[in-house]
Length: 113
Image (tube, rainbow, N blue to C red; front, top):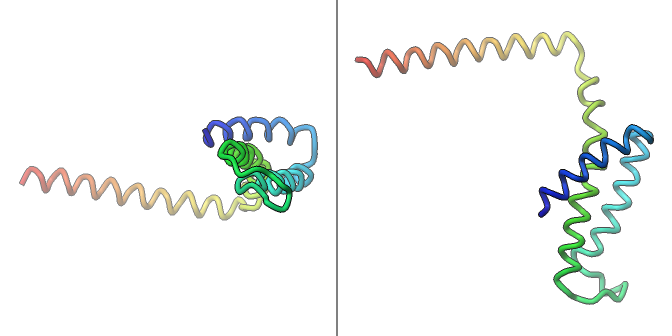
């Protein structure tokens, strides 16, 4: 149930980020997550009844509004890596891939013996 709500929330967030600023979407997401957290443990201060379905509603709303805080950050993370850093990372990955291939070859030879 949470995964489904998170998936719908991610799609909704992507749509909303095209219409509004990413900062605004994140701020709205934080406020909505705070409000939906009141349903997870029904607030006695607000006079909410202690029933299970309110907890499920709160969990689903948290899963739906969670991507509003996480999805808008991804383009910033990607753009923060410079081209030099990307080439270094690619070179390191190629070295690991060669090592993995050598390890696999060694395992095949070891099995034959």
